[in-house]
Length: 325
Image (cartoon, helix red, strand yellow):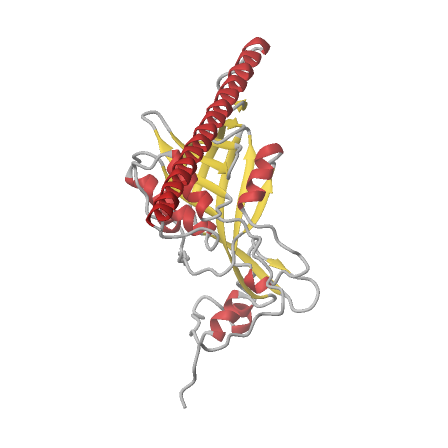
């Protein structure tokens, strides 16, 4: 006989560990030119797999729309690029209450331009399974905690070297933040370039050498390589993937693109101006709370009237039924 009912499913008895890696969404606000659009797509590749590669951008999207989307998909950070007639900006927003960091983009170089100057260009593959390692130099204060939050933290005890494929280097020097993206290339240490050619079955050119031993002594390792001391020795070489970014910190706001200005690179306020701004912020906050309270009271009144109306209708139906009996 055929089975009746649904197929039974086994309930899980083990605890599933949640992924605590931060999720970021990179998008734009307003209209930006094509080069900034390419930069936007390349920044998504840098933060992959902790950010969606295919995110539908719209120049008509407001900040409220983006925040609503970020809350719905439980996003930790929202990054977006804006552009004006004078300059372009990259903003970092901590969901859902801020702060907001605004960086002015002084200059940038796309990955295609970086690889065009390399002898052996490395392909930027979007299928990296692990996020990049973050290395900072000279980054302090709030910006230090910002970049640590955007990029996932690593457990040194459980870290597997074969999963470390990329590095993001952020250097702060003379007020400028230098952003670099590298690919980690590994090989066996102690093996020269000439011997690796032989391993690839490449025929060497011995015209400039007196003997094969003289040719084998050439091709020492470059200065950018590092050998791991214990166990198996591995030489590491960094190949730049791009993009490059040169940024300056423009502004830090306490909320989501609003609230108290914690830092401003151009404007400086006196103590009286700061007090006046703080008072204005508190007044706006109180006004918002008052509007919310009034709205909740109106909703309660509407629900009460609706309930009373339903009770009257129910009472009339009972009276009609009694009269009919």
